[in-house]
Length: 369
Image (cartoon, rainbow, N blue to C red; front, side, top):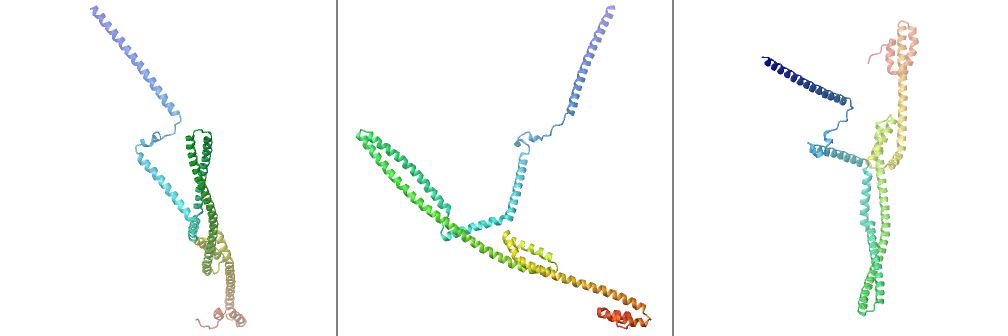
């Protein structure tokens, strides 16, 4: 019995010890976990405290063909470039429209020059210069060959002089003869090319002179064409100045502004330069000045007339008022009526249109028209 009791006590002690060890291990695990969580939290807090880095797009880190929609993006980029090119082309065309007349004139002049050269059978300078260059290069190559042959001939002569064997001497002499013949032929070619080059030079000088003459002819033609243009512009401007003067009979300033705009428009339409346009304006200056003076006189005359009319109206009103007042005062005073008859005569002379009104106000039986 005692043995059983002691056995049970021993079992109990072992159980208690095992549970205590397990609990201690658990506590240790919990402590370790808490420590790790704390460390994590501190890291999080540290990350939050740190400044944020600039955001980078995911597609910036890899090559464009590895993107998911690379073709779409490439096409979009291509369209963007296309639109840019179109805008540029539009801008260029606009610039050509605004300043392209000079370029067109230059092309026209070039075409005219070419046609005149064909008519006069004048060769182009560039073609003759090319011929001269070809001839000079040919001469240089031939001279070089001739120098080489000369050296070979000298060497052959030296060899012949040194050689004792008759057979070899014969061979060397035949070779020397061939070299001499070749040198003669090349010398002839050099002379021919030199003569040809001289001819080309004379042709070049003649062509340059002819080109200068063509330039002079074209300049004269251009001058004549410009004079015709200016005359045409003058006629159009004269016609339009008359119309503008009819519209602005009493406003000289507006007339001058409109004429200036009109001259500018004509210059633009006729493609006249700044200098020629200024000359045209100077030619029309006298006429514009004369018409504007006329307009000023007309305006002043009208103003004077209006002033006079206004004064007359004011006088008439004043007279009417006085006559009315007098009529009221002298309604039954016949002596006053006789006195104011003279005033009535004067007023009738001054303002005959309102004479009937004055007479009626004085008591005369004047019929109403």
